[in-house]
Image (cartoon, rainbow, N blue to C red; front, side, top):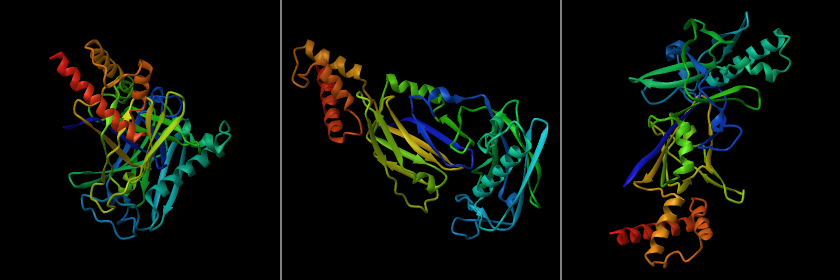
Length: 369
């Protein structure tokens, strides 16, 4: 019988794609110690009618609010105005969107306009990369979702509770000047990309716990993923490959790439793949989270599934006490090596070890009884 062992959602609230490490226990970018809850998330809640007379699909046709699909681009010329407060100075940038221009593209450009103004207007800022850092704020992005079959488009940013931040957005003729509001501080990764923009990735454990706790638990209680399910609001995100990377006991790196193929016309993009991956604190998942997208991963395991090395060693010792030495005639070191090879990167060995563990467990149970 199968059950969900873990379920997480990672959301990119910026207009820039980002390579993210999930279930990562190492150091540097996306290490657990880099998670922060000191940033606040601020939003302007809008609907499609605030973005112009209509919007476009990816193929250039007019988007229809059908409760399933999401708009991709502007469908008419629109003036988009953004205001940002740096110290006591208010900077204002206006971009003219044209028909067919992707929404994310306009957001990247109007954020860049603000950065250029900062570089020109603030003597303390000496490089464009520093200006793009927005003194601790993330560039504005959008999140789209349906609420009772009505499309909601949140314009969103994140910054320090007290500090410089974006102030308002105006879309001429469709959205009066509206201020950002909010103040939640969810767990997130917040760090600069190569261009200097602060990328905010909100990370949630959908089973009610904390992401930190979930990942730390893998060091003591690994889980063997029998099946992996991916969910997103877009096919483009689900089609991004998952790359599982493992550092083995010798410090070498093994990699396994899950290449995804789904029906691009599905209303709710979902992908089931049979991963055969052991998450043990030394294995993490690298995936690109697209601009404004969320990726949900559900890890499916056999109920009662993952055994730790300590569990396996205890069963082996119990059998040895009963004079049973038919399965493992190796020393402890070899048993540990067998355990270390029990992962999705060595498929044949993994299957053999699953059978060995099952046989040991059955024999131990019979002996105890």
